[in-house]
Length: 271
DNA sequence: ATGGCGTTATTTTAACGA
Image (cartoon, rainbow, N blue to C red):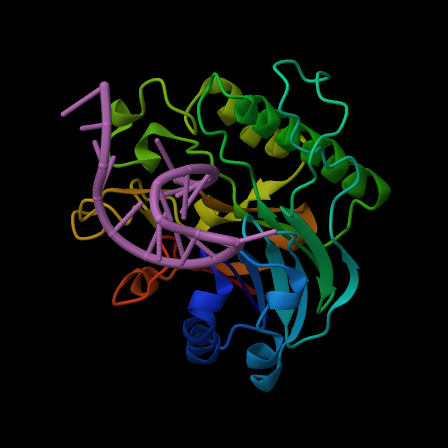
């Protein structure tokens, strides 16, 4: 089975390109992030015509995550247990009515529990969104540790845009990120905590080379200059990690007119 | 120090993103 993840930066602007990717690569299951639409705006027909079932959650023009599959799609969950909302107060419990955002969707496809994840950006270290990002990652770690505790043989793939740069060598110039989000010790610790919970980040297992990027900014010719970042990852349960035979980052998808700023990450799973 | 580019929306500027 071929499983991929891709932050498409608007599924409506990119639907034809996504279908072309599916057909070119023979991807069976695709987790999509940043659909940037409500459920009623999702281009279901485009994907159904190509032979895929769709599960999507989106509340506005922001965020939005989906899983599309041609090997079945069951037990859809539009959030994980304990997923926090964004509280705009200056303290974590300041806001009595946090806003729930469409950033996680789980679905079982071909026997694999796939979670399409769009981790909050954080914006700035002194912004409430930064605290939200850390709380969100911690809540996901707690939830996912529970899945493994319930079933150590579970086939789970947590895929998507993690908005964390785990290593200094995962970015074109770490000096440009002094004081910025994505590289702070708390963010990196929150990311690596999934390893502590028993998961394995299989993209680096298969693609260990430094400066192997999944994102390039639209601005200032970042892609031609290869000024990129590695922020799209797959934390796999042990049983699933053992099935991964290859991982590829599809750099071709950053080329040409109408590209997303992220490219797909593709995982091949043994039967 | 700023904004650079792309997308969206109760659009004609603002919000958001990494």
